[in-house]
Length: 388
Ligand code: NAP
Ligand code: G4F
Image 1 (cartoon, protein in one colour):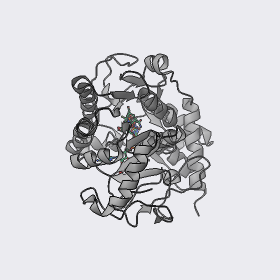
Image 2 (tube, rainbow, N blue to C red; image 1 turned 60 degrees about the vertical axis):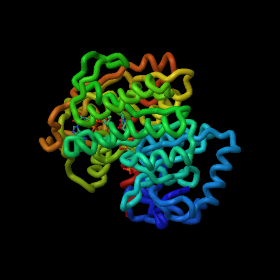
Image 3 (cartoon, protein in one colour; image 1 turned 90 degrees about the horizontal axis):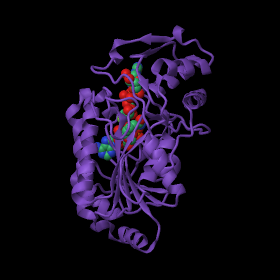
């Protein structure tokens, strides 16, 4: 269900789930609303709602009378947003997603649940849109996952990255404070904040030393969340999540770049893959496991911050070896090193200690590194193998 100004919203079919028949290309464009019921007429976040009084009255009446828990996800169109929406639906929540207007809509990760979630227009850059959405939805839980999440892009657009990842968080917190301070808030913090690590493994108490504008902005988002919790008594938590991946990962991140590259080479669609630093180490887990931790954090009696990680680090080279090996390819024949992918400042080695989450949340990961990489290679082989 799409409560947006997208009268003729398009859905880019592009699911890459194992078992899915969707393709990443934009070749199957259809209207998102299609035969689905839709509340109200086209509008955007700045239009007057008076034309929509009847549909919204129905929504608000339904909200007021149902005992169902409501959750609002910013970043619902992203990797984590899509898995979290699935989890919350399975837990019986009514799920709302804040989406920003794009010239071509980007619903491929949530296409399979579009008829069970309600999308509402808004933007982290626009304070009033956040207040309006919160006032309309009145969620019990708010998951702030929206961000500029690609580290290299943060050197190209540091100011904009700060607007999204730092001031954007403040705008979300301000909106909660003004609309309903009882809303529970999850903030997506990142292991990138540890940067040049001060301790191995990294835990909640490890000092931050971010190495990218992205990491710096995430540290701001982390601390402003804690500050609002302490200043205004909000139930606001930060999850310090280490890298987590899936077949829904964006193609620019190294895991998906590798698994997509392997599939293309295997299927004769490419003859090489260019990468940067093969020596960097990351603690990689499966996104489906990590969104469960987000939800658990908001079910506790008191707000607190948690590291979420597998406790195992692997190098980019190991990732490459497993991915190419799974497809029966010798990686050394295909991988080229390209200085264009070397960063101005690198985070060399991340490894997390999630014992607090294990003890207090009962959380632990279920997918191994090998299982994650092979799952992603298989999904990309399937997706690309189905191309006409
Ligand atoms: P992602 O796939 O890049 O998704 C980012 C989401 O944010 C998209 O839905 C995007 O919408 C939305 N967004 C960006 N700017 C926005 C704005 N100005 N207003 C509204 N929405 C906006 O990221 P992800 O991997 O799911 O990560 C989710 C969150 O966790 C991010 O905050 C990320 O920084 C953080 N995190 C991720 C990891 C990881 O390994 N995945 C680890 C630690 C922390 P569009 O579709 O319109 O672009
Ligand atoms: O996959 P990446 O781009 O992820 P990165 O920078 O670790 O950031 C991700 O994880 C963070 C959590 O720590 C999140 F907060 C953030 O939003 C994002 O999800 O790069 C991983 C490593 C880096 O060391 C990079 O230098 O892979 C190395 N790498 C080597 N060649 C490459 C490439 N990375 C990319 N993207 N592309 C390459 O060709």
